[in-house]
Length: 128
Image (cartoon, rainbow, N blue to C red; front, side):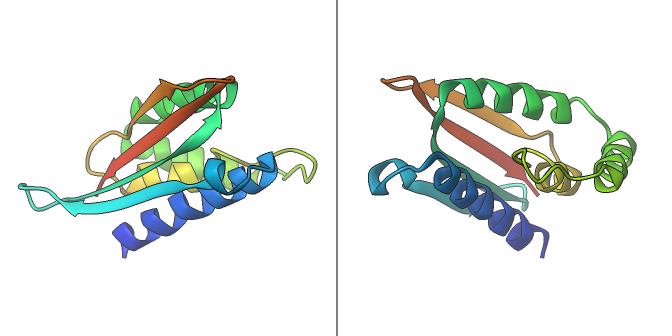
């Protein structure tokens, strides 16, 4: 269930982001892959085109989450859950990303490969 949950969360994040950006079909294309590792865990990877500035913020957010232990992630999750939601502001990289981080058996990993026209390809990897 944790693997499926991460897959759904990543897919929804990509769909919401590309819709909010008004991306057409070529830019909205994304990849989500699930694989079993030799150690018996599952790796859920997702990648999509993002604006470079958004990608940089995602790198920072994932790095922050990867540095937290399970107790700190739980506390952050509860704090985020209680925080009033601003309907005018994007909720990207919030509760869902924290939830994925809570379910991982290794810290989240990500990368950002620059493309042209101020865009980049963001990849997120969660080992569950």
